[in-house]
Length: 164
Image (cartoon, rainbow, N blue to C red; front, side):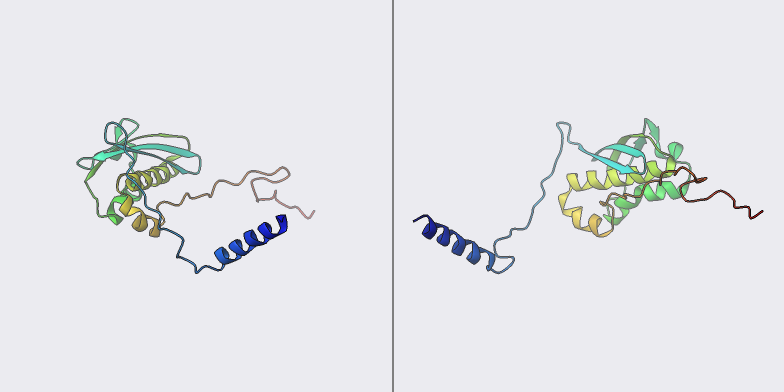
């Protein structure tokens, strides 16, 4: 008798596998994730830098480690990189950002802040996820510095060769 129930179980599995794709799957819907103060929180990473980002509706003011964006990131290229997610989502000067960044250099910190802002925007407005994902803002850039190997001057650079 055990064999007949097993056979029925296999038939059910086969029919489930042969069902047309897309009929049983539902589209994933994302919900707004806010804290008690009405802010969205996210972390962003790039190289060795980690950014903790809080986002709330406001006038477009960005504070980095308690300092204004213009004083912390003096290079215009880094400021432009940080504000890209707002430009792509057409949300320029609509949110205030408060963040703390640790580790890495200025370029890595700017990339981490951009990643954190993008994630916080999707937590605040889930419908922006497609636009930001298509622009590559939600993808963690996994490139890190390659380690130095013994017997070499740097990660890949060899010591100067002398024939004689």
